[in-house]
Image 1 (tube, rainbow, N blue to C red):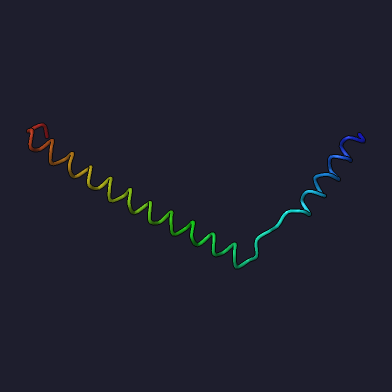
Image 2: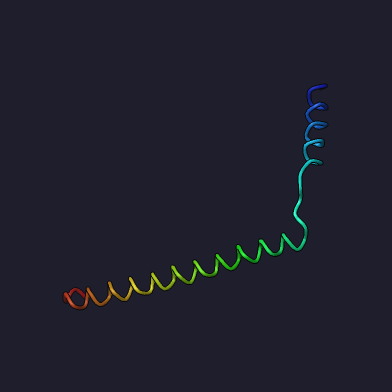
Length: 65
């Protein structure tokens, strides 16, 4: 049981050493992540659209569809 108490004290001590970001830094970082997600989502959507159109054209050119 003493080991559990020591563990909790050490965890609390380490948590106090943590350097938490400010609210402004947090929102700035979250905004950058959101922007990157949107840009990559649009990129892959356009890539998928292009490959889908290419596949449809190729299948119709070969008379398969």
